[in-house]
Image (cartoon, rainbow, N blue to C red; front, top):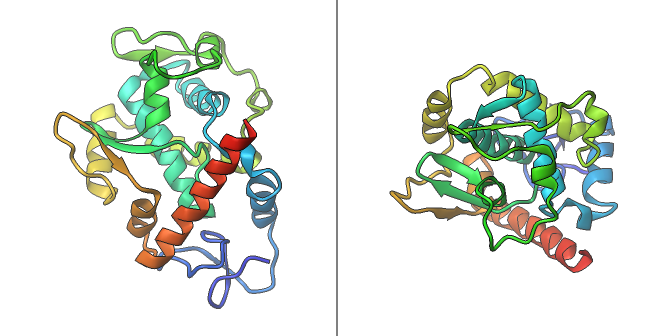
Length: 232
């Protein structure tokens, strides 16, 4: 069983103290969420490293909820928010992508590379099977998602996170989302016209974890990423 200092902590099932704003579960109660977490992160951690298929399906989820298309800046913000929310609730991101501060806010680096068809990124082409090229600053689905069961790379817990993020930000205008994240996400640093890396520990610290705990949690995530790289 995953325990915090005195309670089972839904937000941090890794054994470190829960953040001060965390939602707590009473000691001794093994919840469905914790079981999902074990299945998602412990059984086969190599499957959780950034994969084009997973980022694609996260984007497809948001685009489908937005009737098939969305401004590219807003889509990148929602993808980041989903990984951040997963870290807050479960202690791990969904995508395991690298994080960056860019002029319009925090992003998932691999997702940006897919969006702009970075020639240095080795892809399997999954993104372009689902998502069309950007036109007039918008991206659109090439085929609709008829059921969430089509998004097989995403767990039930992942889908719950994505739905919550869309409910929070889906109706907002893109620059309202940008402004909100600039102010509400302390891990973001304005990089000027360039970009700056965001460490996972920066996000955990912003979420209320002690610095030492945040560093250890980042190390755990990096170990999962390394295991996945060896498995691929």
